[in-house]
Image (tube, rainbow, N blue to C red; front, top):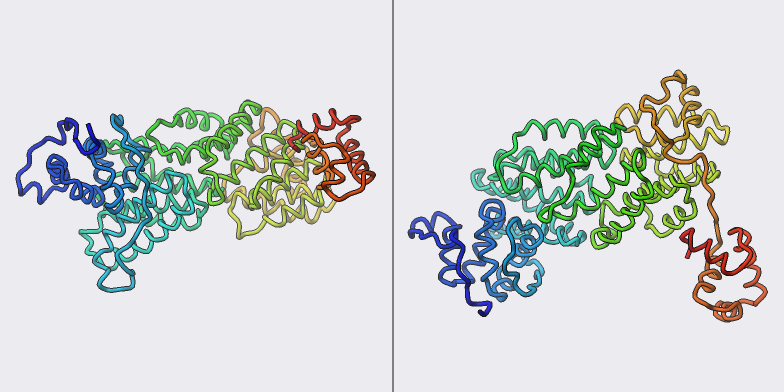
Length: 540
């Protein structure tokens, strides 16, 4: 059978239809076009109604992609992107997977500023949405973000130029654009889009938009550290009844993610474990949520679970989701910070520092580095770094992390007035957001001292006592200079001292001096021992 010869059609694709039904029902028209092998027409219909097909007629979409020639996927606007989404999230078994058909670049009919182009706003909104979702599912967040901006522009255009009765695609498009922005590193831009989707959901044709928007608003507010707001959106999410739909589980998934994160950050272990138990991802769940699930398990284990096991899983998943953790990913710095926290929790200060040195600059990473410096006995450096992020312009999560380290560092340095001022802000932030983990991460004696400093009774310092401390009182960190690191890495590559000297245009004595200093810092007396210690610390 060639790719142009259709196999036996599923029963849903064989239903007869009258001419009137074909004109009124695009799904019927698709079935007839496939039966008659009118491939271009079938591809055009899929591009126009892809959302309806995925939601309500998955069998028809499955049948179409089994028989459509590759040429039609390449030439019809948006169809290759629909196929990419379908193969990634299909709820039906894929009996026939065609040869690879690349998703072509998106093209628009004309400028949105031209009045004669406005009648195409709905068509372009559909096209922009499918390319956006396909790019997001594929982990191409920078590309997805560009399409999300286009969806936002088109959404406003539809709002002002298209009759209300024809705006049924807009709420779902805004929901998907909000999710895309949030996963692609733009949570502040995502929140208003998700709110718009929630408010406009009564005008859409997808019953789950309001529940999905509320769940995502809860999740991304929780990721930002605004747990009080997340709770309110969770309450709305729970009030909306679930409709019978192939997508019900996907809609509920983000609500469970939010529920788990809120419970973890408020130190509610029972609630966290109950929510985490529902977070097994099926094959038809968009895998963009995988890094979020990994982050939740790492965060939970930091407080209650097996830290060594969680660290192993986090490192494995970071590699597994590498394509989704590029520079534009929201979860990239959060997973890096979670890994550093786990390393610190088990006393691996050297490996924590090495991991931080491999991470691109980010406010949450700076806050984590400040905590490392505090535990490593450098309160002044910790205070300097914390001051960079303890600013109102950062997210509540970053700001609270920074303020806690700032207060603790000032207390350890004997600057009680600065500690008093910072800790008052910590208390204010904790009350307004509901977050508990950052403060619980301090050593109990230091936490008690800060509460007493601002006038709180010592017995009320921690309303959520932990069974074990989150971090040790201090961690050892080996700090090698760049030259010392280069020498060790050269030795690890089986270069001799003479070869190192020649390669770096240094004298042999200078190389020996750097190596002696490195050996001393590592507590090693030989080349083999130094390389073993440096390798174990993640320095090589």
